[in-house]
Every structure is written in structure tokens, then in C-alpha cells.
Amino acid sequence: MLRGPATINIWADDVEAARRWYAELLGAEPYFERPGGGRPAAYYEFRVGDHQTELGIIDRRHAPPAAATTPGGAVLHWHVDDVRAALERLLAMGATPYQPLTEHGEGFITASVVDPFGNVLGVMYNRHYLEVAAR
Image: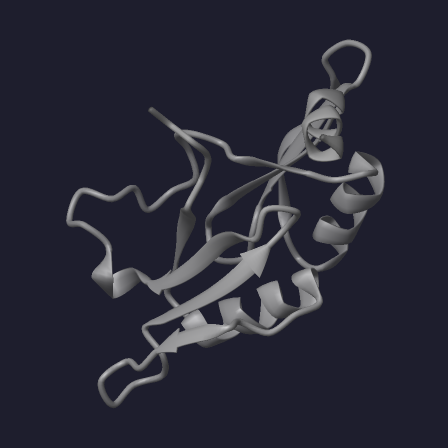
């Protein structure tokens, strides 16, 4: 039933600042923009990773009324080749620690941060991801 992430959406009060921050992190500009009705864009979308997963940044004014305004809930972990280096870069870019670098056994390391816009961003080295990607 679940075939893989199609679009991962995050919220930001300052969509333009979030676009710039994620463009720097990803080394690429968004490929899609939805105008904001006389305001800066309401939505930016990036393609990320080996499977070109969509990462959408949405103006928080479009969030559902009951959407959380503090970090929490599910954590999506993006595969990285070096968790320690990714964590150091995220922290240097202004993210704050959420979950520390943790080894979960051979071939599985995680960490997560809160981006400057209040979203949890997880990074992970996962040997199974590499096995699947190699196929």
C-alpha cells in the first residue's frame, strides 16, 4: 500500500527564508513555486535524493487549524553518507539539536535537528537504504 514518500511538506512562517536555507543545504534551488497572492510565494518545492522525493515548504498560514506549532510527532530521516558531518553542518547553519547522534547497531546511526523554522529534520546512515539503492 505505501510505496514510498511522494511529497514531504514542512511549514514556515517565513517561506522565503526557508527557501534560501534549504537551497543552501541542498545545493539546489526549488524547481516549483506557487505564488502567494500578492505576498511572497506560498509554496516552494525541491527534488531531493536518489529517488527525487519532493520536499515542499508551505507558508504556515495554510496549515490546518490543529497543526502543531512546536516540533514533535513523526521524524523523517533522510539517508546521508556521514551522519556526524551532516549533523555538524546542520547545526552550523542554525538548526538546533533535537535527538543526539545515536548508534542503533551496526550500520544504523541517526540524529535529528529542528530547522530554523520549527520543523524536525532527521538524518540517518542506514545500510539497508544503500542495499536497496544499489539494486
